[in-house]
Image (cartoon, rainbow over all chains, first blue to last red; front, side, top):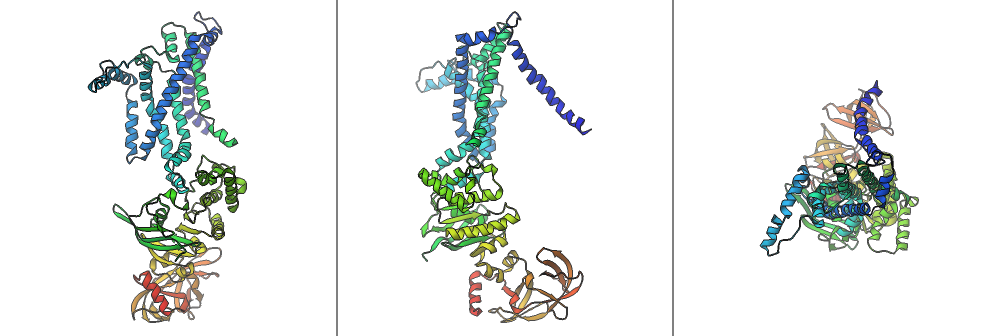
Length: 270
Length: 361
């Protein structure tokens, strides 16, 4: 009786997992072993790892994702630190989260308006006598906009881990003679590492496969693995190759997760 | 005096519409164990925080070794704190926590090792250096917090209700340990607690506080035997407090009887309160007792019986007795002149002390 009752609660969860997580991942693996004529083959993987184009694309994706993560971290940490000390910090953090409620496309188009040749930024430049810059469709603008979009996802976990730190740790640190800077580097920063790590995971992994932004802001000059997947599925109809890239992305994500998750175990051995 | 290490002069702490500290004045000598005792919200922790440098006094002076330290930040003050929740850094192990104060000051590695080892030995946890904080029990965390706080060799250690999270047995053990630690280190301890038993057991000197003021200062025996007013008598230990009148020196009347007592220096017929501690009341037969009461309830407390009784005017009497009595029995209570302590209404501590000096010894 009790057991069947409990099973009722589990069933939707397992169904969800099976249908929307396990089955799609399985299918991606499955398709990656077929070529465009539906014949079983390892060629897709051979092509991927022997082609300079795909490997540079992978390197580019990782590099862009790394830069986006780094920039959003460098901006987010001090911001989270400041917000966590403010009087109405809940309100401020709400304002930081607010942009995530706006559709990604809308935000991308807004940036096109801001950064375009006759956009607001160039108009302001004109006012102070700087000649109009070509900003749209550059690497820099792509990274800027991508970082802007990811910042709330980076701030939130860091902010949460900062507010979790009891005031007495900071008092204890000062009490033992630490300056503000020493307290930040030796106590606050290490204690917020879990937040930083989940922020990195949340930002880095999706950044590997951003394709809409790379089109709209990067102007199709930036081809990441995400754009390649989209091309293969929608344009060349080579689902096998698309799935292979998908598998590579999944593996890259697993590696990223593992790299940011080892901290607890290493501490135990020390 | 040159051996005063901390002095507070007219310290006030005011928040918008609330005064947390009202004219606090005291001196702490080197090498003594002091306790700030009072109910929660009485301002005792605020005093500690003012001395530690975590909060500013609104007005008044905080002196350390004769120097004003009001404007010196917490990290530059030569005193350390043991926090109520210990505040051991979870990202460091035991060794790193204890060494924290030394690593900040570029002390040599070999000296750090030696001093951490000594500090851990002092709290009897030298084998725990490589443990993680999460692996320690409450009592062990407590000791590590003390080891960490004494590593910088402070002249004063501030302890903010450090025993409140421990169970009763451990708390008693730690009382002995803290006391002997303080004596072997020879530094000043300022201990904050709401537990009168802790305060009586460990302190050289107690400050009893209520509502932002120090009501009475003295050694544990004085405070227990000669409380200044109703609040102190009630807060420190159990007590029976009865309103009465001082007939003349050494003679007090209450409940319609006149008794010989040991107090003097009051106006004739002054209204007073009389304190009798429950352990000073002896149960006898009704005709031998000075008062007759009717037993209502008895509770067995292990080492004694706590007996609740009522006199014919419905006053409650609390009696501690090693022997049980009979429920609903009428019994007599006997007590001697020295078992009674007479308190005047609204007497200041200065006047109280000088009045005691006129007739004692």
